[in-house]
Image (cartoon, rainbow, N blue to C red; front, side, top):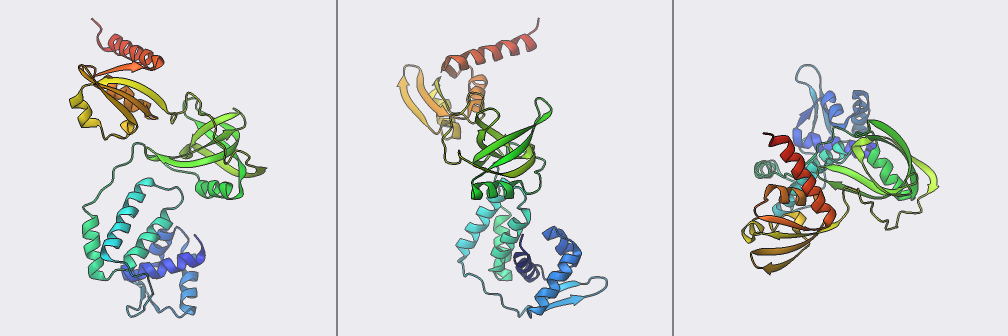
Length: 314
């Protein structure tokens, strides 16, 4: 975060929270207390009326009469923005926690104390659940480095941890797309070692460095390898109409052609959500029958046999 953004953030926070210590501000912005002291001094030189209190219960306050211009938003617009920001919190954008919290404080700063209390009351009753995996952490500046690589259109030196093999590998990598899925952040692109498209989870990246080499694949459409988690496949299923009415709005059935047949519905589903289709077939054996593709049918057979062998022993 730039110094000017942090100093503006200090003003916003003091207007909202009334009083904060240097330690609280340092923890909020993830900087040292010495940096906060310098920021307060700089704000004072700009004639921002910040008052310092020493001793127990001390801290910094800002004169309540101080006016800081802000965009006038309607109550509905404020709630809309707060809902988007609360949903955005679930995205857990790496290295941007402080920026995210500061943005919320700027939105709340546009409200009076009474309006802020009402907005917080409404938001306390709203939740979002879009997480399936919870990465434990990301290396410092992983997002910043990726954005720089897109901006400069350059390749990356990527060191990646493979949990299955319990080893790290070094790759020259041409990034194409940064995206969020299932609760984690991913980047895909051209792997110069494999000479093919690969997808990497950001929380498994050990090191990331921009190279001088130009990214010649940044606008390319690469073929997706068979084992790619996000590869699209087409499945044909026969399903009981009652079950379909229950699940028809699920994301993995978004691109589905439906035909009525005797005894059910014939679905042709185009989706990257293979696990969800597999679970649908295995969880509802009496109401769902998989027809195609053949390799998927074989996989279902092998899974069923393995489960039977393990749990139906005499």
